[in-house]
Image (cartoon, rainbow, N blue to C red; front, side, top):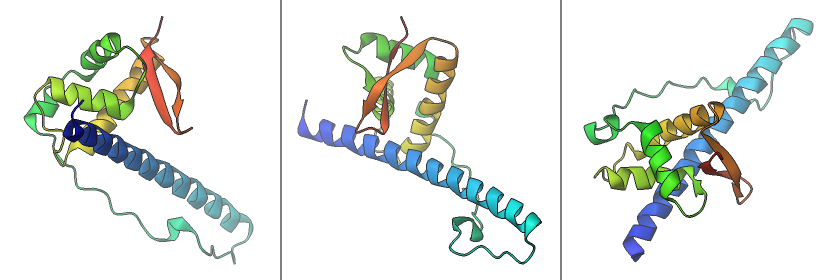
Length: 148
């Protein structure tokens, strides 16, 4: 594999990891906020300190995917990529392979949003018994394979 291709793949992988961490932080913020609300019911004088949820989150502007990303059938593309892979793949690897296959630019600024959609499709395929998790990389990133 060429250096530039490897760097693009690594970049997509890291962006995917950033998105996963942002989602995790947002989920934890929501849990902390819920706990703060319950505490306030029992102790009306309670004022949370250092709570991550004290700063309201602004919703992200809905970013449209470019046509080359939007037209891709994620489920079908994922199954093809995972069938052809000789080993389990991370979400970022699946995403970059699908993008390359469909002539999409892996440096596109909407790549993280596309990665999120691929991740969602992987979870849906897992629930339907089509793919499964095959371990993790660094204890955080899931590896995926076709379910036997």
